[in-house]
Image (tube, rainbow, N blue to C red; front, top):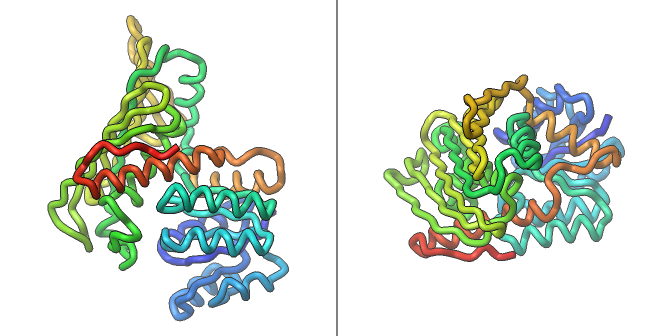
Length: 324
């Protein structure tokens, strides 16, 4: 059982603490929060030790790895600090806000000789994993296009002031919802090379009402589109089109394969706790029993696409190259 510390015990940090308590491969033993008044009772509730400084957690000999669940702009300095201290690092998504920072995060962990994992939890859905297998089998033929959507109520629920700061959460719902679609696209279609965007804002933060739409060109010649809405009940979709078939999921437990001349094939799966799965995959990567399923190149590609979306929005939606 891997024993881990966690930096950041806000809404999502507490979700990870809960997942760790149910995990068979990782358990949290130490929590860090700069807000001691808020953090200490959370640590006590979860039965873990508490510190108000990262350096103090490093004095805990029980800690073998560190999970980071803090505001986005703090990720790179914390990754560097944790890696330099010799600890494997798990960082919540988005890994960083720019491609250059993502490269620096990977290089810091490589220089320290420790693994780096990123919390793209929806990659652990059995639906997404099955879609990747079916595509690899060639059943869709030549891939032509991919579509996606991600909505949730994160602008009005689980609110923290930093989440409304455009420096921390640029381009509408990209950090809360859109990055999930970007990771699915990178996983299934490969890296993007160009994006064009439209951001429509009906009400500014807090409790924002906005929608972002992104058109993409991929390095492999595919096209793609996705939208993300911050203030609508949770809904997600990934749909891949090939010249022989198309494959869609709108549910965490079901995919639909449509092949020419055949009735749609519905394939169902059991529900999976994706937070528990990603923490256990992190533990397995540290143990050397299985590589973490988000390779470094894809971590960087995700952030590069995200950064291009942010730049396109800032330029009024202009086509923007994805740095490769």
